Amino acid sequence: MLTQLKPGESAKIIAVEGGHGLRQKLSLRGISEGDFVRVISNQGPVTVEVDRNTVSIGRGMARKIRVMRV
Image (cartoon, rainbow, N blue to C red; front, side, top):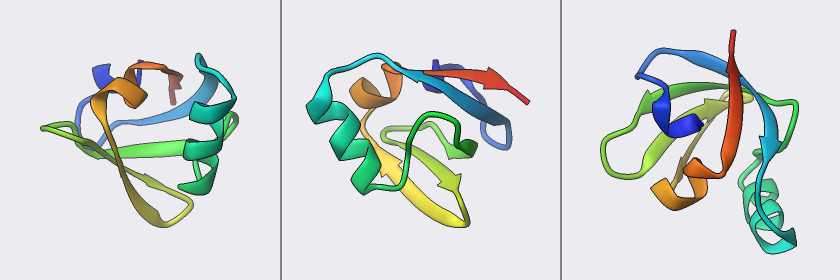
């Protein structure tokens, strides 16, 4: 899960375990399966860097994102 990564760790998104609405919300923020992310902060909302952009998402959304450490 994305919430299990520590600040500074990088990972590849391998699955989004949610419905169409969740996938669309993440896509609008630039997050989709196959992307590489780096965690900036996981205190409160989870803040990640993806494709040189900084994005914050709620912990509930972050729990539904399965990742593989790189």
